[in-house]
Image (tube, rainbow, N blue to C red; front, top):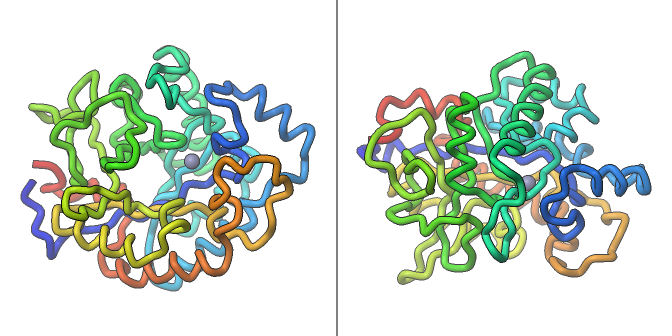
Length: 308
Ligand SMILES: [Zn+2]
């Protein structure tokens, strides 16, 4: 990697989904039936889409063009919103068909066959491309559960990049040991997520971390921004920028001011209560810090020294 720290960029992304797409509500590996049943029973459950315009405003005020990774099923429910995002000059990426997790978090075994994963991803991309009228080349794995087989399939389908891998000391949501992976963009080895020996058609943009004397803390944004505040995230981003290009992301639901309509799950209480205005201020603090280095993934891909 030859990127000089002074030229390192931050790829800014927004994962467009709702509060109920997460694993504390949807059963793992749900192919869409549980989601449909939930939405039929609770037609007023949606909240996240109401905060996409606020995300656009925050970015626009700072002249930042970002990548919006959409859950395709959610985009189909809000086509005008997606078109508005695309018309504002932001990239559209794919965040799965229904936000189904593709790995069992405990066993790390796949929850979908490779054929089913490809089929669902083709469907999701077709929906998004139809709505935005442009090629969709980027993927972020729902819940960041990602495997080497998934990346191989994405490359075969013509995706140019993925941004799901997070090296940290608290969890590993992948099925690989992530040998040699840091926070710099890299070519992943076929069949795994470690470093490849040769170039290939797909680049991985791993998430930033804060290294505290060997203890690595995820610093990409989203839930960690809610839980730990912006100071640690900014420190992690600063460190990661010294390693090369890096990533920051958040969700519209992070800045949602309304109560979620159901409080039946307390598995992840911070996700349900720490949000709204105070998290919006944290996002804005990070955006102010990175504004001169902020780009979207498709712009970053044009850097000839992206991966060495
Ligand atoms: Zn997500």
